[in-house]
Figure 1 (cartoon, rainbow, N blue to C red):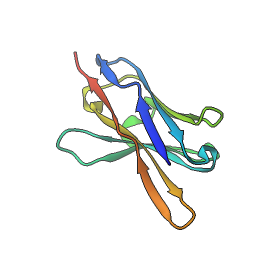
Figure 2: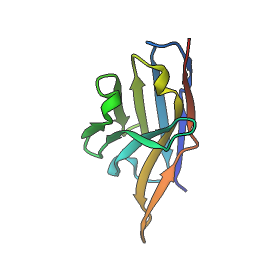
Figure 3: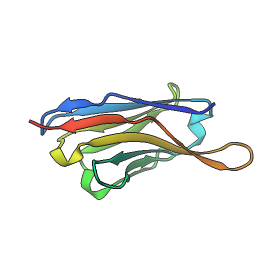
Figure 4: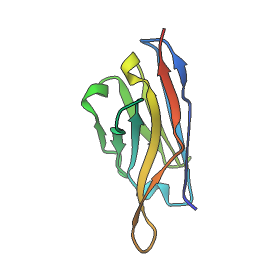
Length: 119
């Protein structure tokens, strides 16, 4: 079955860095676009970054120049390098992909990893 497992969250001071990982299994990872979303307390979940199956990248405006999404298809893993972190980056970060199961497209989410930016 499809599994997406995030790791790498934690507490970091403003201006610091973290690298999140999303380990994928149960599907042909290299064939699918992958996304990072985040949800801050009291706010809707928002798209942070997307990487296509051929490496095209897209970012939300407020993370451009600070965050970098990447993937290692040999390891079935996606990453989010987060630099120059701000308190407003505090959120639960989720890994996501829409995957064809042979009959229909299905949405898959990881369990999330907490990122807290605070002094």
